[in-house]
Length: 120
Image (cartoon, rainbow, N blue to C red; front, top):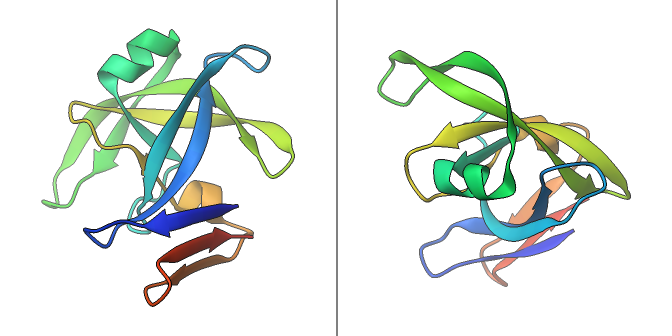
């Protein structure tokens, strides 16, 4: 899987997010966040557009050190040749994050000389 580093130095990859295992969805540009141990963070408005089903309320430890309750939803993404069910955390912002939960078992390379991102 290939991606790119943008002008702000963010490592990004495109991810197709679906509301069901067999349905359509949309492609989002996800910022790879190795400090996020979950799978995906999506803006709440995108979650609503995709019709994702709420799966839980989770306690999330945020950068300010506090644990806050956040809504979690179920989505599906094509991931290395299979359709994978993933947990999506809702965000009030517009940033899409891809976390370590999807990177485990893979190799992430970010080359700031060539501005290339590779997940193998």
